[in-house]
Image: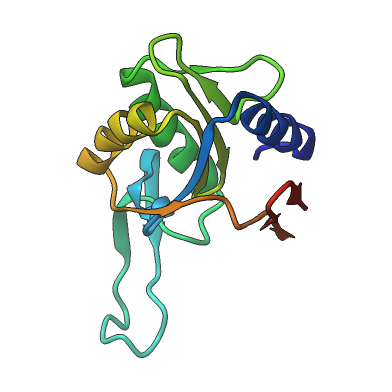
Length: 154
């Protein structure tokens, strides 16, 4: 998960360089994770599968492997675009090809860059995931972001 200092630095950089900021949310993120081992579950009662045991082919919310499986899947999708994970924070991705910085917090993605490059970057993951893109940055990691005529307040 992105560290607060990485988030603050990226927002300050965006403001200083006049870059755009946006947020994206991946729908049902953990279900997109691939499992690397066999996982069997007993379904909850009342769904008509009493007495059955299910073999999972995809990750589910609540599995201890789910966050890592999701992060690995998202990281590989970003790597296809040429994004590299930063050594100081593995949830910050930078691309030498695009003028874009991506910060990951579970299934929330904060993107900083030029509008045209962000648009190009968002085209690729939509092939793999259902993404809801929100222009601007308004609420992230329990921090409300307020824009005024002359400043940005956290």
